[in-house]
Picture (cartoon, rainbow, N blue to C red):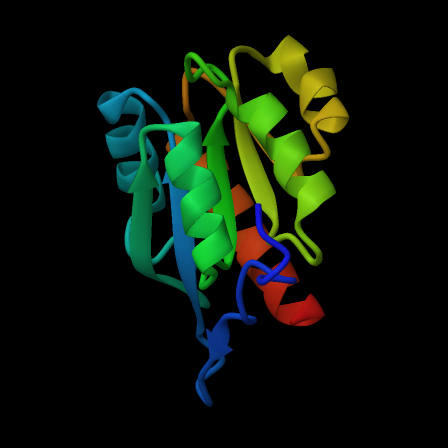
Length: 149
């Protein structure tokens, strides 16, 4: 990661109607996992949160490049991705990016929540993905990003 980007992006926009518009980076080497996350969150994961764009990445290098470019409000990383898992990638992002956007990690099972803590993730949802849990976690992180903004 470069020093030229002190932060991965500006705060998401909040309109006069209270709607939080966020840009989401989604990483998984498995297209079905990416599809499942997008379907679970939808365009409006909550009444006050709208996903205006998805930036999908299938490799860790693509994630780092996208984070260096900025403009990301919330990050979703698949902990089961290979060859670079989302948990290790999350820890790297949190350690290297000043004011790193909130990160949601997808863990292999509920018992792996401790790994999400180790990775410095802001929230975790286990596989198999529960659409309600994904939407709630994404919405919560979007609201937190606005509050910190």
